[in-house]
Length: 330
Image (tube, rainbow, N blue to C red; front, top):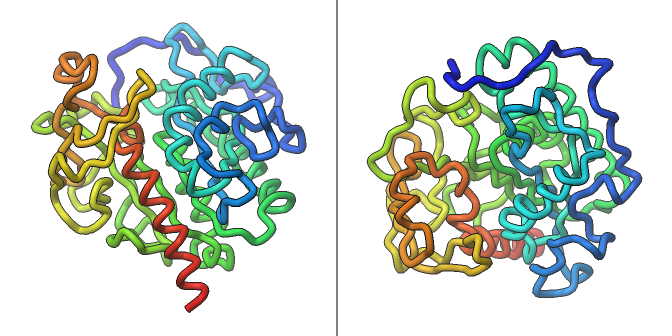
């Protein structure tokens, strides 16, 4: 898939990769229940200790500067780490804060250009190995030292959702750990019909042990060939979640929308309605928010895959936690 924009780049040299994180150090976690200085703490409505589940959240691509020729993010960069907390943790991970304790590792994510050719072939794939290696090590450390057999929600967006897919294949699909899986929320990436062997697409608001995924565009504005990177790619036959009704419905109305979380730190209910066809969620332009005129000019709502349905995700995640425990009792 081609890319018209020019990015600063360089040869990929493994020895020049940023230093790996040490997940025994709490500073290697963007969010962690044992940290008391994280933004996520503002969103817990109950004590973290009382939550019955864990959420392992992987944040999306934030290394996007066209003048930055790095292949992977440097975790020693305080500005980059603060961006993770101020954007991803605050406006995405927070959606799951009242379903479970949030664990979110810093990782050496790949630069945005890595998803476009020729950059994908010239270093992007190798950089992706480094990024996912961090995710695996953080998850293994979490399982060994923090999980203690608790049920798990896997959540991520965009690049984070892509790594979630790999995590599900390597640790859950057809494996014992799947018994601890409440659900995987993986919007912003393509999930093929045959992506998993035993992890199914969920079509009921209370279903557990499967996954949910969607890609959002403004209604009547189809993605253009060659314009969107491979991890945004869509297929008409791929499973699509209705992130408002959480069932097989092909649409939803304004009054069913629980609420989007906007950058003025307010939640706006009854703001969008959606239709589902051609493998995508098609959203109306959000109502009653500042900047709605600008949103009329944007066709790809990928940036809002979580924010647009923030309250819907929040309530649904809590419902699935309760459903998981009810199944165990019965």
